[in-house]
Image 1 (cartoon, rainbow, N blue to C red):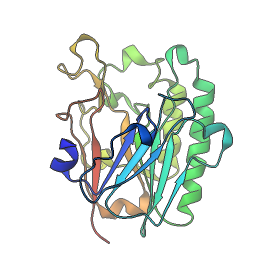
Image 2 (cartoon, rainbow, N blue to C red; image 1 turned 180 degrees about the vertical axis):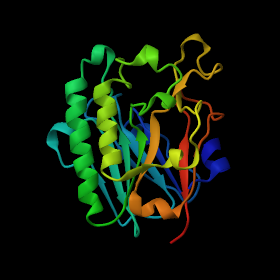
Image 3 (cartoon, rainbow, N blue to C red; image 1 turned 135 degrees about the vertical axis):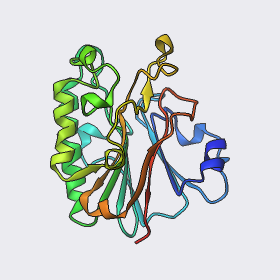
Length: 233
């Protein structure tokens, strides 16, 4: 509530909400319309969008039955773009879910490219992958760990090859910028983190990018908020 009131975003996307809409008191500041998507399994996964501008249309999932039971994707259509909020599946310890993750990455990129045939796309959320060595504090120690395996990094590269821009890297080329920290060992205080939360945009939206940012000072989660500002068309 404090974050919404202080930052006043036009659109806020949440991942891993772990709730049904009816579980939450509807006490948002005036002007926000919420859209919730929950997993079939209660207390697991889930996404939500809070928006001041009413979308033209809102859809749920990526039109693939095998991927749409975990509440991972909400798409809000606006006049000039689609906004796709995503909570990407974790490959899990020992990469025991890596085969599913690879199928997901392929299906999700195909979904975004299908949307792009109509209008530009913004996709944001927890992508559960540090793309390059600069995107985590200890790359050598994590080469085959979930979030930095060769398979997941190759999956992320599909977004770049499809023409999507990693908005934060359009403005900041340096290291030590992270969006997630382990709760163990004072990792956040020491800034031993990972950048796994992103805003990716269609190349056509690159000229409208005004800013892309990370807000590590915002507490309340093991992640912190990331965001972008677009110039009005």
